Length: 194
Image 1 (cartoon, rainbow, N blue to C red):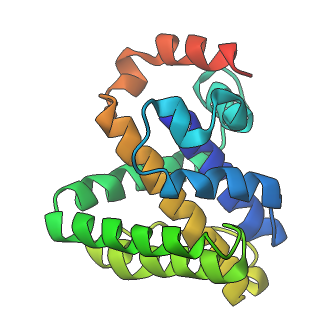
Image 2: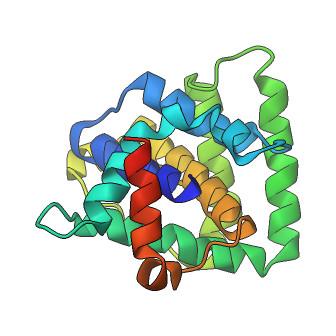
């Protein structure tokens, strides 16, 4: 589930970078996982597996034999996993991340999670807490869109959601080697939710 979420984040980042916007509904589903910090089950983080249908489709395409692979998606997901490892090694950064997410949760009493001010706050968390860790994720898209502050904020907020999913992936026992040794099992699970 967390892997499908990372794929869905990567696809949304791609859409925002290339076309200027993704669906606000998709953005909302992904950003909500950031503020779900005390879930009872992994499904609670995403409000159900049905919210990750696009992520499961992308994951299936990436793991299946054939020409539907997207190198950009692989780079984004790999970058998220690498950044999560750097974050997990820095307790101070983890504490700061938690504190800043709690601040954003308080704003949600007054604003929707897709409101520009909330998206900007989430983007600022990414910029100030995660970017200094040194593992930058190179985003590809139209230069005129990537120069716009709103586009940058959406991309950074989405990447923060991707980090949340990478943390969950690791917490649930996920490792990079599973792409090689458990590929069939991951693919079979992903196909169930398309």
